[in-house]
Every structure is written in C-alpha cells, then in structure tokens.
Length: 273
Ligand code: BG6
Image (cartoon, rainbow, N blue to C red; front, side, top):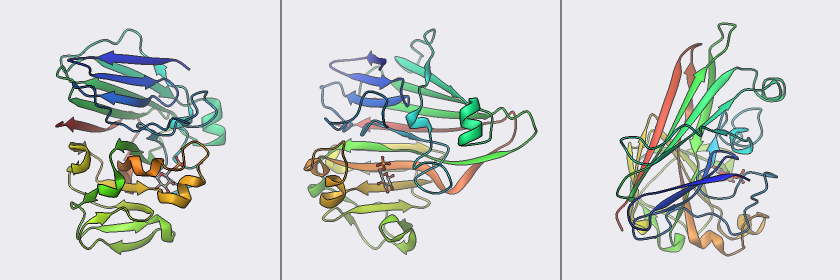
C-alpha cells in the first residue's frame, strides 16, 4: 500500500497510508513515537489498520446501520500530489468521494471529504483536519457521526485521566447505558466510554501530550485490557499495556450538513517531551 512521509526538525516525521488516509506514525523532534500502531496491523488493505489515527466516518462505532466506524478507514483515499508545505509546516492532503458502491451499499449521499495532515516546523506538534462537503444534487441535507480514533503510546497501567469528572458518558461495555464520571479514569479493566461535552483541550499526562480539538465535543476513551485484546487478531496479547485511545469526535449529536456546505473539525497534538 502506498504511504507518504513528511519530516521537520530533528528526528520528527509523520507517516500516512492512502488506505484510510491513516496516520500510522508521528515521531517528535527527539524521535519519540507518539502514536501506537500494532506490530501485527494488517497493511494490505484487507482490514482497517490497527493503531495510529483511524478516521471513523460517516458513522462512529455501531451508532447506525453501517459497518463499525463507517467505511472511510477501509477506503483508499486519493493523495493530492500537487499539495506541498503550507505556512504551518510540511503537509499532506487526501480526498475521498462517494462512489456508486458507497451510495448503494452504505450511505446514500454524495460527499467530498478532504483530510489535511500538517507537521509543525519544530516537529513537536501534529494537526489533522477533516473537511466534509455535502455534494448532494437533490437538495438533501445529510448527517453523520465521526471520530479521529487516536491510539497514543503510553503505559496504560500508569495512566490516569482527570479531565472527565462530572461528565456524562455512554458505557459501551454496558450497551451504551448513560452514566456520570466520578473522579479519575483508571485502566485496571476494560474501558470503552463515549464522554459527552468534553473540554476542547485534553491531555494524556503519561505521554506528555496535550490534545486540542475543534468542533468535536465528545471524546471516546478506550483500552481493551486483557480479554478484548486476546480477541483482536491484529494486536499482540500484551499490547493493551502500551496505549490508550482518546478519540475526539462528534458522536452524541450528529453533524448536519446542507448541500454545498462544508463541515470541518480538527485535532492538534502537542508533544512536550
Ligand atoms: C472504539 C469503540 O472506538 O473502537 C470500541 O468504542 C471498539 O467499542 C474500538 O472496540 C475498536 O474498534 P475496531 O472496530 O477498530 O476493532
């Protein structure tokens, strides 16, 4: 499968596969890998890549009739070869449009999605931006849910998250039942929760990472722990210890887009180590 790499200061680099417009690696200026990608991830297009930043679109999870997390992560996006650096740093652009197959077998809408991946000149910040244009000719508005399903390298056993206390969440382990978070999140068991109305800036202290999100009010926090990891064919049994997913998204309330209009969200990750 085709992949592209951009580089900036020091040892920094970002790798993106055209399958899924999937960012699989971001090394900061000191060469530290920030994104977890499974060593047994399939890289032949037979299934979504396990790790990095899968784009969930036009459906998050099982919240609708489509396959889990939608079809964008299982589709070949088109790299824009004429796209180069921007004033914000070296960048890549990918596009995905509806096809007869997506309209007939998945989502009956015309759309044009663009995905921009930009590495800051200092190498310590990565921005991804998703734009979705409604190109329906029949005047129909469409709606979707989405998430940027980021897998971050960290020691999950030593991770606690404190920014969610008081928030409502849907607990996917109990079929989405709504609960309220009291205190910190710990990872001594499987965690699979959609937190609603999170702050626009989050952090992952165990990875020295700041997460800034725009137009994505929700965030999924996921770690499969022992049994679920054993059931994943594309992840070594012990690797649940090596990452936490924090997945900014628009999940609780879908995004609505009128014909001719474009909806945009973005995620900026800042590495402070
Ligand atoms: C998370 C979901 O976003 O993705 C979990 O909340 C799911 O329920 C996980 O298990 C991984 O999904 P997949 O389809 O990549 O195995």
